[in-house]
Structures are given as C-alpha cells and as structure tokens.
Amino acid sequence: MLHVKPVIDDSAERFLAAEKVQANYSQGVDVALYEEERMIGAAHVAFDTDCAVLEGVYLTPDRRGCGFGDFLTRAVMDAYTRSLPLFKVAYKSDYFLKFGFAESEDGMVIKSEEIVFPSHCGGHKG
Image (cartoon, rainbow, N blue to C red; front, side, top):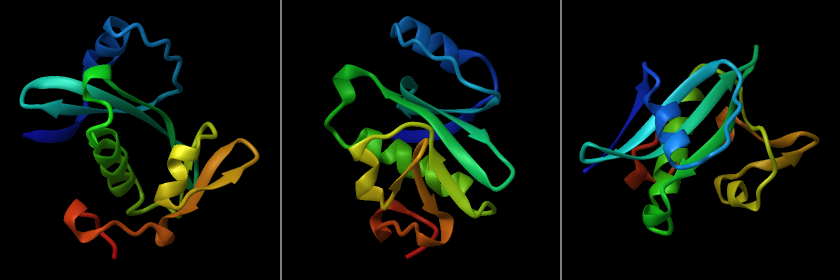
C-alpha cells in the first residue's frame, strides 16, 4: 500500500544520500512516499509568500514507470495548494506539462485554482 507523509526527521535526507542524489534544498518540508514501510520516493517543497515551490522529486529506479512519481507529485500539489495561490517547480521539465504547468522564467508554474485532479486520484478539486 502506498502512503505519503511529511517527514519530521532527517530520514528523507538519509534516503537521498543513500540513493546518491545530490540535493541542496532551501528550508522547507520533505515529503516521503512509502510502499508498505519502505521509503521509495521523496519530494522537497519550499515556500514563498504566495506559493509553494517544488524543488525536487525523486523515486527509486526500481519504482519508476509505475505511476508512483505522479502519485507523489499530485499528493504534494494537493497538500500545498489549498491556501496558496500559486504552485511552482524550481526547474523546467516537460514532465510537469501534463499537470497543467506552464514554463516561467525560472521553472514551471500553475495557479492553484487551475489544478484539476482526476477523481480517482483523490484530489481536492475537479
């Protein structure tokens, strides 16, 4: 069973280090994706005055291509767009176009009110 939860210790940092991921994130929140009790993914979200900024998403190589990255991305978007008008990604990637993001000068951006999740994903809008 998959579940996502904010990380309140350094387990996401240890996970990324064990996976040999170079991450230098600003202050914010780590969110972990677990399959049963095994951490298989992590994301980092920082905050600005009017937006949440996704600084990175990582999934173990053996779980890529199964939709788990989409699950983690949507869970993070859902959790951090409820009270902020914008959601940004700190880098450019065509991957985020399918969620409705548009390129900005420093990454990707979407207005929180424009985020629509399919009902089977459990999103808060749509």
